[in-house]
Image 1 (cartoon, rainbow, N blue to C red):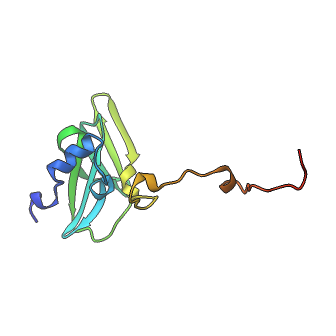
Image 2: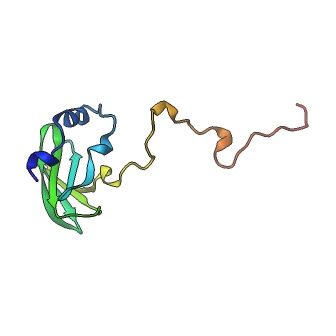
Image 3: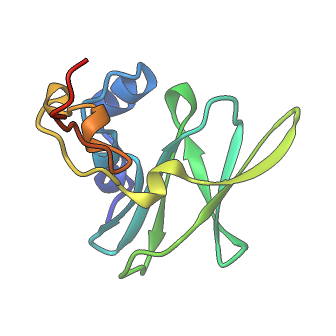
Length: 134
């Protein structure tokens, strides 16, 4: 597998950096592909980024444009939990990749299809009518 095969498309990187990508989970996070796993993430302010598996650094991710990082881990055949270790001149910090969990709410066809909860649909409340007159 060549380096080009697993790298994100330039237009996806640009859209993610501009917060204009319609489906960031399709690009960011851990993705199993032929021959291994690719991990991609967006970490503003990081100059260096490592992937940690079982608490140990296993991969240094390559920095692309706009704080976008990605790397290929050969031989992986199943998903796994991981953390990231970022560093810059100000120090080092470790965190769980927010895109490493996958979309939690599921795929929405449009954002307008979501309905905010109403008073009578939350906390067991319900509208009732009373025979008493005010």
